[in-house]
Length: 113
Image (cartoon, rainbow, N blue to C red; front, side):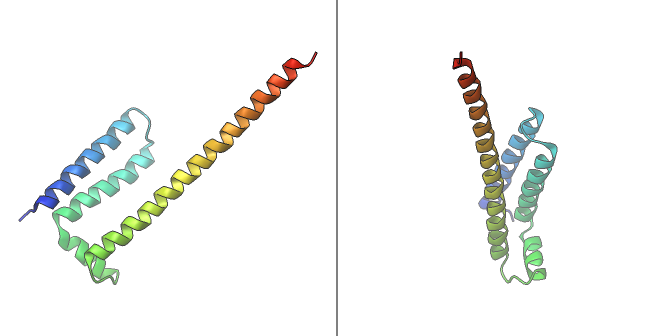
């Protein structure tokens, strides 16, 4: 029997997956990133439809409760995504610094007679 929380998880996963597909279509998401998010959302749908699969996987990995496995995977995923955001922000900061330096050099050379 399917529960309300399972329905909500499936609906949310389908919605999020559709958002990723739209981002792929308008080229703001690369195919590799879309593949990554597809794995996440499909896994969430599959595990919500069959919690026994998650329990079997957690037992195989030596974790007693399936919810513990879901929590561990979620935390690892969040740390990975935070790292990706950090790298992007740092890269943008370096690009902004480079542009500001180039503008400063151009402005300082224009003022000299």
